[in-house]
Image: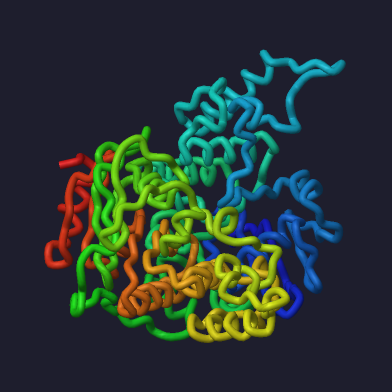
Length: 495
């Protein structure tokens, strides 16, 4: 029989107005990769934050290495050998790789750091993972994949016995993902246990041994990976079979250019031109670093262009700032929705009305009753799962937070939506709902440009796809020309 390293029994947790976990059990064997999945809001992150000591459980029992855990805190959990690699990495960009790996564990004494020993120790962890990372490099200069590896080395330096990886592959290139898979196999071979959280169900069959599914804060099932498949896991997650839908329009009623960017050039972009019609969804596809995000930021006026012209409904417009873009009917759903798209501590209604306050001015100030009425209407129209509009946005799932950002721009009646990685970190049901909303928006005369690293997402919803490679547009495909192998060829090789 496998040896159990972690037991979480009857775990329950309630936030104001939200029951996050109800009587949840989790059993993890030593040395296995145990996958944890569920729709947004299922309770995965809450369960892991209870394990890490970031949250205090309302009820339940945790047993680690055969010992009951009564007091929990991030520091105590770390000392026990349980560490978490969060999706939002926690490296200090201004410190070197060595300093980040040994943060809080730098060798030395008498108020001096023994740098020779520090470099030797860091070199051992780099060698242990078999990667090529310069120990003297600044963390902020590393790629996302390399930064993630440094996070894992931090775990090794803390003598970890169990590592929780929260969406570790969400922003990785194919090569970086392959490296991550190799590293996980290495860690498993060294007896380290992994809890692996991901919305990309296909990769579970590459990395995992067993999988546990949560739904609405409750246990659904735990199975061996070899005994299940993607369709079955989806059904466990959402409670019904998800049918395949096409979200592409037939192009009826499409008019002239709603937006036209001509010859955009920046430090990252080289002569990029893209146009967008009314009632159209245009996709931007390319590998990490191809310039997709930078192009959206340039249109929005966040990144300054060195050369180029922008036309909105045929009228020339110089992208100056986000404020200027909002006035011109452009809304932006950023890749990092928590840091750049929302104020998480504010209630839902305040996030929704944030850019449309001028609409609600009265003689003596804002008409708050009308604001809340309009907010409730958008909550209903977009099926945002929240007890009411007064709940702090931080307590909602990623998919519902993304819908709130959409509601914000729809309340402002933005004619053009720039959407960066719209479904990153959200589950299959929420993805389907986001696609449906975006198509409804374009059917009403709006236009959408989506930048995504998921090709299937773009071919599913877009009317046209532009492929970017090293800051350039290298190909354009109409919906009748979509062929994954050809699009990928351009994205990888530029031709």
